[in-house]
Length: 139
Image (cartoon, rainbow, N blue to C red):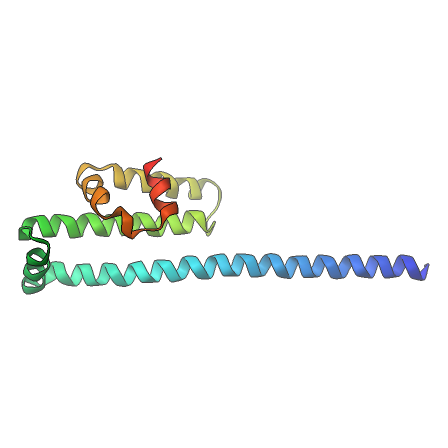
C-alpha cells in the first residue's frame, strides 16, 4: 500500500475518532447541565413540600406574600407542577429521551401548565424560569 494513502487513511481515522470524542463531550455536557437543573428544581420542590407539611412555615409563606394559607397552598402546589414541567422540559430539550417518549414529555409540559390554577400561577412566576422554557410554554 502506498505510504501517502496510508497517511490519508490514518488521518481520516484520527479525525473520526476526535469527532466521536467531541460528540461524546457535547452529549455529556448536555446531560450534565440537564441533571444539574433537575437537581436544583428537585431541591426547590423538597422545600415547598416541607412548607406544605409545616403549618408555621406555610403561615410565614402566606404572610410574606400577603395571601391566605389556602392561596399559599394552591400556589405551592402549582409551583411544584410547574417545576415538574420544567424538569420534563430539561429532559426533552437535553434529548435525554428520544423519539416518541421525548414528544410525550413535550405534550405533558403543555398539559400541566394549561390547567387553570397552574396557568394562573405560571403568569405570576414565569420570569423565574429560563427564557427558553417561557417561550416553549407560551408558544
